[in-house]
Image (cartoon, rainbow, N blue to C red; front, side, top):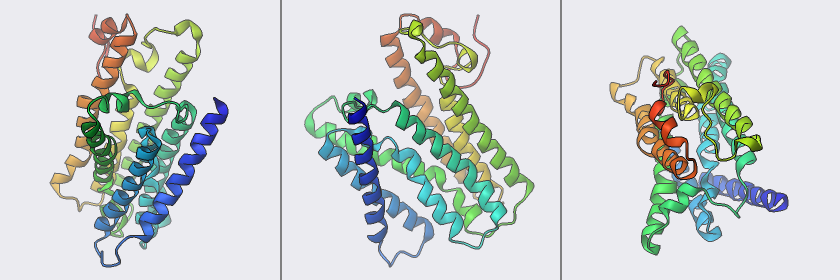
Length: 287
């Protein structure tokens, strides 16, 4: 198993390196708009990863793309313009920590190409043509577009040569705290699952006493943190509130319900926990 996992991860590294390199060199020179160039680069890489998933018959190849793909995008935005070191640190640091945390989670939890995420299996459990449509759009393209849209506020703080202000400090700290919430939640769950006596039981202690998905709450708040960074520029139009709000909708209407459904099928005590505990927000349990 360990050998299979290591080999699978090395295959992922090679595919990702090739995908990002080819995506970059294939960018049309005629593209002058900064964000359009980012979108095309991001989409090209997604298509290459999709082909890898298709030929390997395992869409879990896409899993680390959520956290890895934003890193070169943020590096490009923060280091390609005449921004101060202070601004670069405030913007880049929480995002790099977020990406490192999620990628570490993937390294620890992913079992290799012998295993595929249950969500992907469910989406592809249909006719061959519909399965591939779900694979390309539902598993690869739509998540990429959501991440790209979520990163859009960085355009206003990275490329406009904005002076660092109190609002940016607040936004950066907010983003750090969101990542901390994710990290603490995941570690609490990992510790709970490591105890063999908890097999088949529901984690309903510590942060998980107040939310069924505190890690997802941290993820949502992370994207609002990026929005607050852009907002600190004083240049963003009102409609950009949609950038993090679409992420919120993704977790409320898709990710949380899918995890709840799986837990209901696997744990006898989950319905009671679900009835008493908030889906996302940290709230006192119902009596």
